Length: 117
Length: 113
Image (cartoon, rainbow over all chains, first blue to last red; front, side):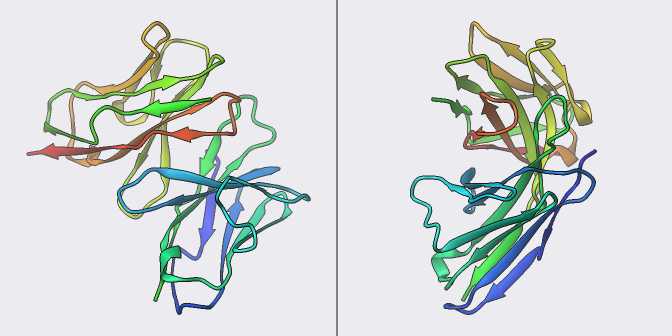
């Protein structure tokens, strides 16, 4: 089946620094990738939709200047948490949609756990 | 607008017992419905999906779900629980098949020996 990877799997950083998370589709091309955030014991909340070659679409309440998304190729999207603060600590999950799939679905990455000290 | 509710944030069953996890949805158009499983500190794994074909959908690990339009439900079942089934389960709905997913709050399944 389709595989999506995320790097890093875990990251600890100091408050005020920026952290970049990569999301890659390994065996398919994804024109659209999605970034979710999951707080402990809660469901996934969509942060933004990343479209290859164009600006990301952010959900209401998500600061685009804080969560920078770049989708430079059909297999890679990056999420940069700028000037991270402890409240940004969370589990970030990306997903990708196979543009060639007959029945569209999203394939999820393994997630990145961010801890901001 | 789409929405998903999952009755019961925590369900406990004995090993070998029937597993029933409830999911109800609302959608203005025929929906695509999904069940995902999440093990601790991991991403989501697709269990099964309904895409307007057969109403009874069989997935991995012995799970299946039945789409009931009249009840707007898509409950997940497994005849006999295994210890390895203990995890968090999320129901999700999408009106466009591949995007605009809305996830339910999740149900944590515990399997007792």
